[in-house]
Image (tube, rainbow, N blue to C red):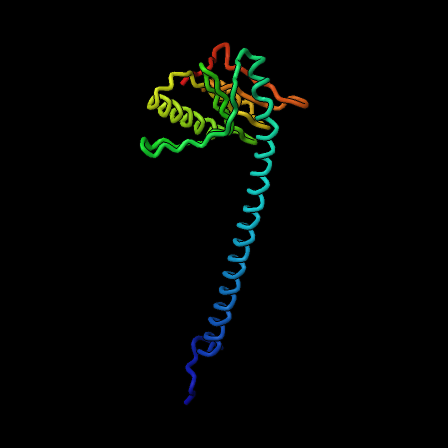
Amino acid sequence: METTQTIGEGLTFEKVWAAIQATNAQLKETDRQIKETARQMKETDKRVGAITNRFGEMVEYMVIPNLVAKFDELGFTFTEVNRTLLADWEHSVFTEVDAFLENGDKVMAVEIKTKPNTDDINDHVARMENLRKHADLHGDKRKYLGAIAGVVFSDSDKIYALKKGFYVIEPSGDTFNITEPKGSYYPHEW
């Protein structure tokens, strides 16, 4: 009598067991490769994010120093420019503004992105609403206006920003231009 039972023609328990162990080893190697690829992708994403953040910072440093002069050409007179982080714990109002231009009558809150999209524009609408809420809670009656600056605007995103009542700031040669929401669009005041 044979000590090993035959499973089908030419297959033995030992051969099947060896095949299962080989498959298991291949699955473990594939799993290791997938984890290594995921780690490399995460590292690449981190590096791309750092580059994008640096590029965004560069855009901010190029735009912010010239904002007052450019808005002055449109008839605004702003006397202060700040970066603002608003954290009003008492009233649960939190937001950050890349450039906050102020005078006695008006505030212009500028969001600066490398490539603004509709989500960024909608986020800025929410930011403007938070700023207005905070202003109302503190008796600030100034008119709040918004602007979005970007290196690259798609035509549809630019139109969307103008429809939302934002001034659009984009590069032009060595400087940048500001497009006013006018015609069928108008500057939104919060």
